[in-house]
Length: 201
Image (cartoon, rainbow, N blue to C red; front, top):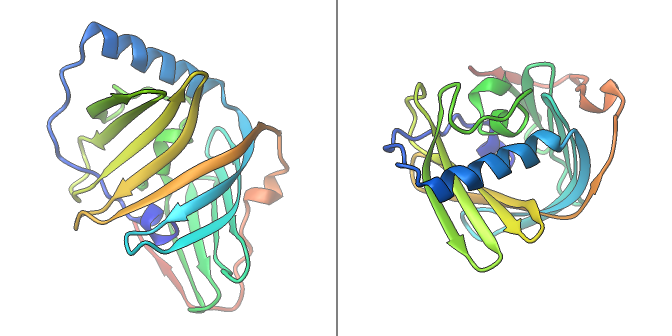
């Protein structure tokens, strides 16, 4: 996660021709995601090099998310008020970009629609107890993709995978998921310390 979630890594792959069964599945997924107004979860992140990190996440739709990494990782990722902020004390650096330019913007949208607003489906992969939906955006130039992974009984978001322009993957696996919130706005605000900052977009 971390900087991988900050990268506007969207593909220009061809849209998938959805079957009636696919459309039914997508509708169920959209209904599920739109019902998730607030939750907490623990997460396991697996980077492209195999390194693993853990932490806790808070999500509040629309537009807010916070990831805090367990010690000894000092990083913090905060989404709120139209921005995504990644702070790395070890590098003494903070990066801020528009939330709309990141893969997280799909999950945090006011209304999740996987076939509109410039988002389209490139693949649906089913296996026992799990379904993966891969997504791209029509108006983003950088190569890459976002795959959402759901358990099917019951339907629940369990993981996502961000693939960057070089084909490197970072996966985030959620567990101990629980409905929660509403949370205070302060949870999704970041107070900039005295450190170099980079602003992208």
